[in-house]
Length: 122
Image (tube, rainbow, N blue to C red):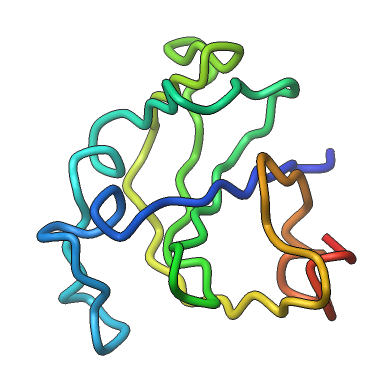
């Protein structure tokens, strides 16, 4: 089974408690309510697939900071409302930008997320 990930962009205030990007990676990272409770993208289009995970790229950084497993039954993906299952997985995965930007919803797999050479490869 291929586990699909959707990469979404989030402002620091949507991702981190207090809205500030942590200076160090580690357990001290505190997440904001959208990461802890429910992610809603009212000003963004919904998801047109049913990925199993969300990876969140933080605007202003070149990294993905958190992965969450999606609770498909409680989510309304077509409306951009995502409910979570389990705890957030704190990660720090650099995003290698080529000439392509991460805009909209980008779908990929864990393998591509880890091994990509540029955003075009995702």
